[in-house]
Image (tube, rainbow, N blue to C red; front, side, top):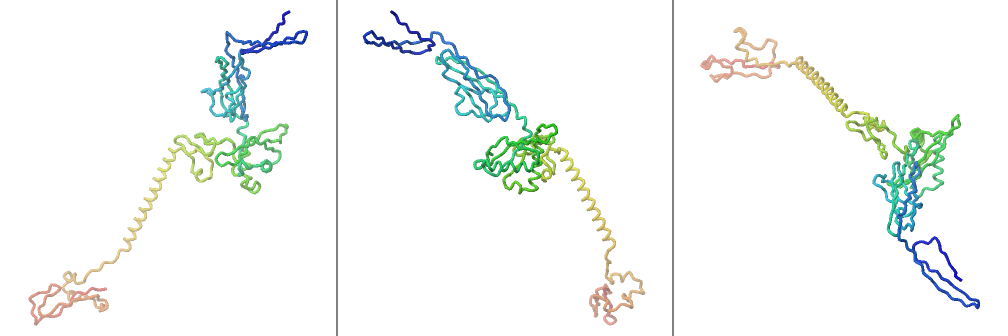
Length: 389
C-alpha cells in the first residue's frame, strides 16, 4: 500500500516534511524529507501606485497606496521618489517613502508627481508614476486670520472658545464663525486662528459665505472703537491672502501687506503719511516732472518778491536823500566883490558856528591864500572860514 501526500501553492524556498508510520503492535517510525522549490524563470513585478488623484485644499495629507503591486515571487522593496516636475513643497511623513503606503503632508496647490519602484527577491523591478492635482481652497478669499497674543503652546480649548464667541458677538446676529485652522506663528510662537463666516440670514434659506474683506473691515472697526470687548487677546486681524490690487501696477506682499510696485511706479504721498492703504498710484516720471515744475514756480515767486523788495528800497533811498553840507570858505572866490567881506548873514550867531580859523598876523602864512608880501603895519586880522550848523 502506498501513501501519497500533496502540497500546493508552494513558493520559492525549502520545505521539510516529516512522515510517521505505526504498525498494529504500536510500533512506529519517523522520517523526514526536504524539498527545495526553485524557479527556473522569474517574471518582473508589476508596480501599482494607486492611480492619479485630485485633491482640494484644505486637505493637507496625501496618501498613495502601492500595496496592490504584485510579483510571482514576492516584493521585497518599495521606493517612492518625487519627480523633477513635481511641486517641491510637502513633507513626507516618517519613512513612508520606503513603505507600500506613502503619506505626504503640508500640501500646497499644484501638481505632485511620485514614482513607485518595486523590487522582487531576484532583483527585478518595475515602476509606476502617480500624478496628484491639488486645487486651491474655494473659500480662500473668504478666510480671515486673527493673531492671538497667547502662545500656541499654552492656548487652551476654553480660551479659544471664549475668543470665538466674542468674535461672533462683534460680527452681529445671524452669522456663524467656523474655525478652519489653528497654527503657530514661526517667528513669535503666537497662535493664529483661521476662520470663515457664514451668513444664515437668507430669504431662500440658503447659507452664504461672508467675504473676507467685509469680515476684516467689520472686526477692525469695532475692535478699534472698543478694544475692551476682546481685551488683550488679539494683536492683528487680516485676510489670509492679500487682496490689494496695488492699483494694477504692482504685487501685494502677503506677509507685510505692502505693494511691490512695478518699474516707474510708486505709492502716493498719503500712504507715507499713513492715511491711505498700500498702492502704486503715482508714476515716478510724472512725480519728477511735477517736482521740477513746482521748483520753477517757487523760484519765480522768490525772484519776484526779491525784485519788489529791491525796487521799494531804491525808491525809499531816493525820497529820503540826506542834505549835503560844504565849507563856506570854499565859495569866497565865487561870491561877488560886494559880498566877499562878510560870509555869515546878519542873523547868524556864534552858536551856529561849528568852528572858525583866523589868519595869523606879522606876516605869517595865511590859511586862505592871502598875499604873502603884505606889510605888518597895515595887516589886519581876517575872519577865517566858518562852518555853519
